[in-house]
Image (tube, rainbow, N blue to C red; front, top):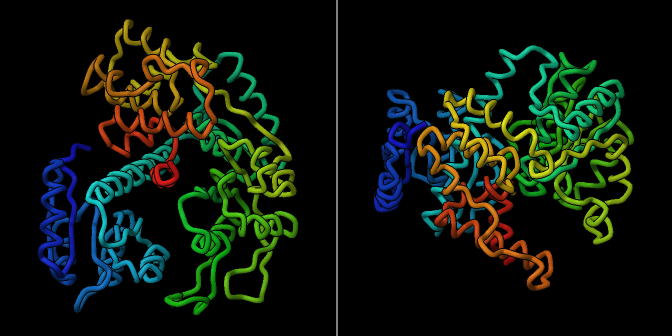
Length: 431
């Protein structure tokens, strides 16, 4: 979607704040409407539904909670971003529980707001595409592109894993297609007609992730006006996909282990347990054995999750599939790739794996063969053998390089690095 077609509604009862944000977004070619009153903003939304909403939480009259509820009533898929004062994080977290996409505290950096606007729009696009594909794709349809030796082995493993109703651990670098594998296992198995529910374990803080997974009772915490079932209950009878399990907060690992052992959950604030019948498929780009040695992941949980394991190869180790993948994405984006461009794609290193390749093919539609020049690969002269460094130093150096090549665009940098924006933000802070 072109930015000049993306409608952003900005709401804050401080006029200077809405104008500041609006000017920044208009400079980036977004179509922006502003309001200093929540009730007026909802009327604007009724007349012309926005693609994304940015609202202050505490406002006179109709506040951010009212705006959030009103927008979700109009269209539950519209992302709502919350602005809040530094001392009101608890209420912002409650807004997340009620359906907001993200919150940021004042004062904030304008480029951070832009990053989350773009991230929210990307997430919505992905959800819409997933719903569309599930609606038109036959159960068990093969969406893993590639027939080379590596992917043939993966497909054979999937066929075997499908027959066993036990936990599965999908390993591989970011961008290799771990969620696709999880969906194939679900769609091809006995649970195919039951729900497939997915969550990224890095997307929420620990206390919010616990409630999201296990649910909570009414009054369990401040602002919990209604009970919530939790994702384990939503996935009952089906499959729960836990992405980036290696980054799950340690305090939740023991609770997850108990659920896997006892097959029952206890909502936050409740003394009553509930039985659940859920197949757990977990995924990680982290070497869990190393995380265990570091004391950051429970060994017993690793063994419980790793009953059956599938390792996805990075794209650089399956170059025979690159042309086929590129053609697959070309059909998706309705573009025609040149033979020379395909040959060039086969020579790239693809640190962001299949996800990065898809982004490059999409950019080809607008930039032609210059699409690769805006996709950072290995830095010129970047040779790890020239100077021995720690993995942490190498990672930091490469993150800085990618950010520089992306001209500070953190959304694009996160895509190429194969991590989500919140993980990039944390790693930047630790550099």
